[in-house]
Length: 359
Image (tube, rainbow, N blue to C red; front, side, top):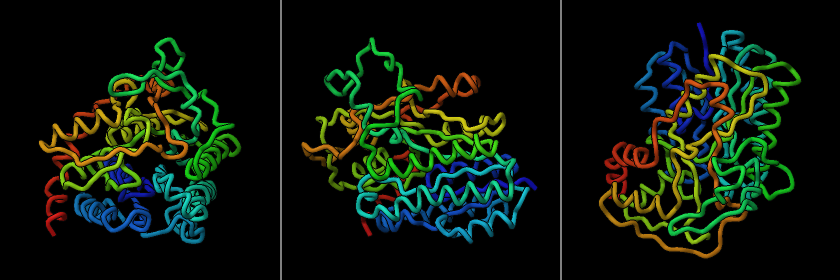
């Protein structure tokens, strides 16, 4: 029996990982207590996705409603499966800048202490397992905002002669910048994952993602950019754009493309690996460009307003350089760009969103 433990298993990346590895022959143990509902309200609950996952995977999936801050519960879970655990994919998180500022202790408890609990349980029970952590580009704080950016008609762009013109590499400093409290808690977790790799010779990886997206995202006002934008377009709910003239740029990676990257790492793991991962130059958009695409896909206008003040520490421009990961795993390629991602989000959710809006 080969076991994969997936935290945040009812969320976007966790559910994609659970389905992929279950269908690859693993017995998947999913850990998810639907804290997303606590963070962002009933509309952000992942219960619908958990039920769908359980129906799809049947006996290959076992669900555990465990809070990863509960050290004893995490230890008991890992002790139960022991050395049968070959893979841990850690996606559970408090993912919002704004929410972190409201409840810093909960944010740090989930993101940092929860990660430490999982790492130590893995070290004690299955030290040879591959440990994959879904980190974030927010570990770089607001340093990207110091890059030489040029304003264009619908987006900000980097000076084409700059060394990061192809995307931001892992050599950008994470020091001396404003991270947000969310970013700080993820930095702590990111460094812990690296340290367990180096200090205890464990096979660990930090994937520092840009915007992670896809049709299974329970998009909410404070998290889930593309999914929430499309939801507002479909339902008529008003949307607010904050700062930078709406020209802020994000790269967006489809959950399926990210899980294929995880699989590539699992097949040939490194020790304390760190990769920037996202849509890169292949899949990115500004806020204004995303609004236009949503309106095209949905066939209706988004009701949106602009507010001059940007969110504290928010990036003006982020595009990942994928070269480091592609050097190590040359067979991996992105398969989904922003227009296709938005089409999939719309087709997968329009009926559910419309019914909920009517109800």
